[in-house]
Amino acid sequence: MKKVCSLIWLTFIAISYFCRGLQSVSEIPNFPLNNGKKIPSIGYGTWMANGQDLENALEVALEDGYRYIDTAFLYGNEKVVGKVLNRWITDGKLKREDLYILTKLPPSGNRPEGVSKYLKKSLENLQLDYVDMYLIHVPFAFNEIGDNLFPFHSNKTINMDSSTDLKAIWKEMEKQVDAGLTKGIGLSNYNETQIKKVLEYSRIKPCTLQIELHPYLQQNKLVEFCKKNEILVIAYSPLGSPGLTKFFENFQKKIDRPDILGDSTLKAIAAKYSKTTAQVLLRFFTQNGIVPIPKSTNPSRIKMNIEIFDFQLNDQEMNEIKALDKGQRLLNFSELFDGIDKHPEYPFKSQ
Ligand SMILES: NC(=O)c1ccc[n+]([C@@H]2O[C@H](COP(=O)([O-])OP(=O)(O)OC[C@H]3O[C@@H](n4cnc5c(N)ncnc54)[C@H](OP(=O)(O)O)[C@@H]3O)[C@@H](O)[C@H]2O)c1
Image (cartoon, rainbow, N blue to C red; front, top):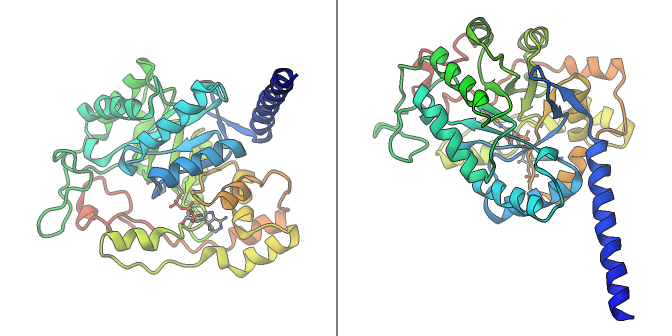
C-alpha cells in the first residue's frame, strides 16, 4: 500500500512539473528574429552574479519561466550557468531547445582568431554544443594578456588593441553559424555607423543589437534604425542598473547613478496597475518590441520581473515614459577603462 501511495505521489509530482513547464513557456510571448528563430520577449541578466547566489537565482528563474539566459565570457559566470542548465536538461525538466542561451565574445578576444577560440571556451563552460546567440560584446578590443580579462597598464590605463578590424571579426562570426556552434550572431554596444558597415559587408545579418536602454536613455534613432533593418533590440540595464555603483567601487571609481526606479512618473503609472515601477519599465520595453534582460538574485524580484504579461500600458502612459528620455548614459566604458575612448572603434565618441 505504502509503495502504491508513493508511486501515485511521484507520478503526481512528475505531471505537475511537466504542466508547470508547459504553462511557464507558453506564458512568455516570443519575438521573431531575422534568422527564422524566436527569442523570448524577456530574458534573465546575469552580470554581477556568480557562485551559489547565481546558482540559486537561476533555479528560481527557470522555475518562474525565464528561458532566455543572458551571460558573457567577461562575466566569469558561464560555468555556473552551465551547471544549472545541465542539471535541468539531464533531470528532464527542460529540453535544450526550450532554452535560449546568449553569450558574448570578450574584448580581450576581439580579433578574428579570438572568435572561434572564445566561443569554444564559452560552450565548454556552458556544457552546450551550441548557443542560440553569440554577440560581439563591444566594438573595441583589449590586448590578450594571459587570462586577464581586464588588462591594465601600471599607470591604470587599459591595455587596448587598436588594430581592431570589425569586418574580419564579423566574417569569423559568420563561420560560427556555418559550423553550427551558434544559431545566430549579433552585436552589442555598436553605434549606427558601425552597424551600417556590418550590414554592407555581411553575408549573415546581425540578428540582435544589445544596448543600454532605460527611460533616461532611450536611443530612439538607433532603435528605429534597427527595427527598419530587422535587427531585434535587447535592452541592458533596463531598470537603470541599481547595482552599478557597487561594481564601480571594485574599480575604485565613483559614479552618480540616477534612481530611475524612484521616478515619480513611473510610480504613478505603477500605482494605477498595482505593479512595481520595475514591472512598468519591463512592460514598456516588451510592448515596444524590445527584449529587456533584468538581473536579480532576489527570488521575489526575479518572480515579479517576469509578471508583466497580465497588464497593458495605454498610449498616453507609453508617451509619458517616452518623455522621460534625457540621453543619460550610465555605462560609457571610459570611466571603467581609462583611455578606451581613444580606441578607433570606441562607439560613443560623439556623445
Ligand atoms: N552588453 C553589455 O555590454 C551589457 C552591459 C550591462 C548589462 N548587460 C546585461 O544586462 C543585464 C541587466 O543589466 P544590469 O544588471 O546592468 O541592470 P538592471 O537589470 O537594470 O538592474 C539590476 C539591478 O537591479 C536590482 N533589481 C532587479 N530587479 C529589481 C526590482 N524589481 N526592484 C528593484 N531592484 C531590482 C538588482 O538587485 P538584486 O539582484 O538584489 O535584485 C540589481 O542590482 C545584465 O545582467 C547583463 O546580462 C549587458
